[in-house]
Amino acid sequence: MKILVTGGAGFIGSNFILYWLKNHPQDLVINLDKLTYAGNLENLKDIKDNKNYSFMHGDICDREIVDKAMEGVGLVVHFAAESHVDRSIMNPSEFVKTNVLGTQVLLDSALKNKIKRFHHISTDEVFGSLKLNDLSIFNERTNYNPRSPYAASKAGSDHLVKAYHVTYGLPVTISNCSNNFGPYQFPEKFIPLAITNLLEGKKVPVYGDGLYVRDWLYVEDHCRAIDLILEKGTVGETYCIGGLTQDINNLEVVKKILKILGEGEEKIEYVKDRPGHDRRYALDWSKIKDELGWEPLYGFDEWLKKTVEWYKKNRQWWTNVKNGEYKTYYKKLYGRP
Ligand code: NAD
Ligand code: DAU
Image (cartoon, rainbow, N blue to C red):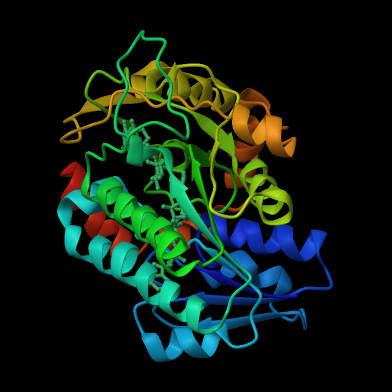
């Protein structure tokens, strides 16, 4: 089988390609990626000479390149996106372009090329925000209520994917996943930002009161869920994918990282809150468990420790990434180097 992965040089996409080639060594994987600030071919250095892997540099908004990438492909797994909420607040246009228009270009090409399955990677952020200390939880039937430009652009892409299934019969599946963590995550995101700042002797910026809740999932669990959806999922269906944490807030996450690194709470710095900051996400993943037999294998505390170890061992990877554009972005967002 020939499989096209979009955004395979990013955090989850690169973990997925490494996972896929390990578990499906007979398949051919094409990675189409624009290599934005978030794309990094270093993530894939271990497989760059694998004859079943090839890289194509290109933008998913470019019809010509997308049509070329789609030739002879059976499966498409679509990760490519602008993915960081804070950047979407600074510059929403890029998010609409890549996440909405780029997805539509891919869908057109998938139809033209009679793709057997188009799997769209989405997020729990499309469902909006839950209240703290509440029993409510998102599931596949929750109404969409995106509240950031990022979430709105992902919601737009989800709607297009569903519309191409209903209107044109494109065989699609969608997964809405919670916050991932693990190796190769760009250090603009909270967990790698906290770890790498501490390793550099800096403080960890915590937005607002720090009592924001996310559902955390180790990235390999996400990859395994996608694999199962491709293998056994029902065309036209959506699956929610979540982790094992239960209402753990950002301060608790930072305190765990501080403890792992032997640092004190004076390393926490409360900073200006994110505008429109979603208070709480929680996800019911019983559908994928009951229908496909998936559940997370990696507990938060143990895999957070392993993730910290990974960042300690791979200092060169993140120091390279934290140079250049990252410095300008960081200063603009946090008001200091
Ligand atoms: P990322 O920002 O680390 O990587 C995105 C990748 O897409 C990069 O390699 C980038 O170069 C590429 N890309 C961006 N614009 C492109 C374009 N126009 N054409 C081709 N390539 C382009 O993102 P991530 O965290 O790995 O997220 C991957 C996907 O998973 C996204 O769709 C995101 O919405 C979704 N998701 C992420 C999380 C999370 O916690 N990170 C959770 C749920 C869903
Ligand atoms: O829920 C899934 C989503 O998770 C994905 O769709 C997004 O692509 C991904 O970026 C992530 O979005 P979040 O906004 O939840 O992740 P982020 O790592 O940016 O922030 C996690 C929490 O930490 C959030 O409450 C904001 C807070 N935070 C973040 C940063 C960067 C801080 O307190 N300080 C920070 O410096």
